[in-house]
Image (cartoon, rainbow, N blue to C red; front, top):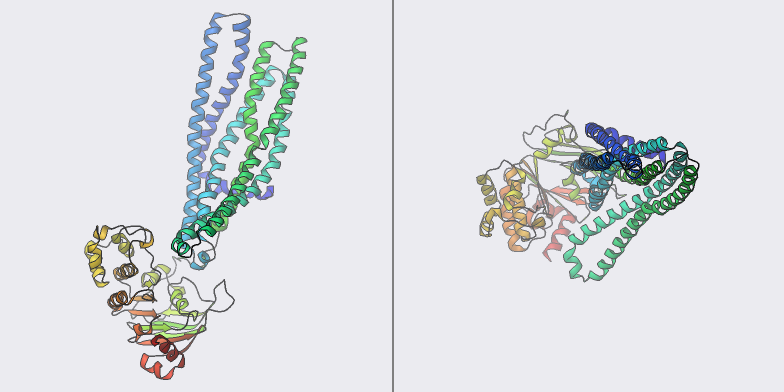
Length: 580
């Protein structure tokens, strides 16, 4: 990362995140002045301590100077504590705001954006990168303020004691600055690589949690363990690299300090011999110089913290700056439903990850309160049609209308409010059954939830569970069977009371008994609703008002089951294959 880029990132961090906390930063600045003054006072008090107590043996000073030293240390400690408390809050609130922005971006981003980036990398941005920014804002800002003021106070004391020795002592400062600049660039590069490795590890962990059963049934524990070791070793090496760069300044600073103190003692000895420097001044100067060592070393590493935080924020910026292609527009009118008619006019769509169009020049019309089914081989484009209606994706060609209203020209909230979806991939949360169903309507009463479950044929099995509706179902409903999860999903859709229902192969993964129960629940759900069905088993759509037969992204025929079985070879072929 070049210095100009670093400046731009730090400038943005200040104006967008840190500026609102200026009151706390100014308080930390005021407290840092007390820390710097107290530190300098400790070194200065050695001057009268040596002269008045040890040389002149003044009893009054023997009592007051130790007391003043205690007061100086106490004021330094308390001021530093309150300064750190303030600046830690600033850092955590900045990190929290960034994490909220990332979370919000995940929630409002269009599905295509999320599809093209692994969830583990988002987790790494929230946990690893936000923490790097927090460290920059809290530790970096406080150290910059506190240590700069402390060095100024101590150097001023050095000049007060002896300007010749002071010039000699400050020779190491430009050397420390050059060192910091060099190491800062390296730490920025190392942190970027560590961030990428952290994202890979989060992605890998996410995969092995999801695939835990698959890993065991295919006996891939050893192979996955090798991958885990490789990913973790890579992150460990990157972190070792960061740690090595961070402490690389230590031996160099120690050597520089050694040469400086050695030269200082020789030079001070000559000044004392010539009568230009008293022993009391020497001890006070030496204390100031030694106390300045730590803040100077700290300032030498601030550049590295800046590069670390900037590299992390650069990765975060790619997420929070990403343009939301499909989002809410407050100026658009709400969707006004009358009959819930659906019309596709010359619709074409291609996923970013493929070269071929998923659907091509699709046109059809579905009348309100009827059921339309889409059939065809895998990859024919059936799910794409379902996903375009709630605007999970937007078509590159054509228009989709509901009751003659272009769905791109109405409020996204009102559009999705009118739709409910039940798919083969049931999504449930690690919560109670009641809360999972009420997700569709937070204000739902217990009676409404119970009624929805009865319609979905779920009430009976729920009541048999140990805690009934308050039963915790585990991550994605792991404690329930496939049929039970599907019925809860249907109950959720029933509770939403949407006029348009989307069914994406809702019974494809169920056994015969479960399918019959779920199919009856679906019949209750879709009664007097406009329904679009993707059917894997053609036996489930015999009664559909209209069936669209798809092949290679196009509609090749449409009609009732009886019509298609007699006049459409593609449909007849699909039907015969399922009878075998």
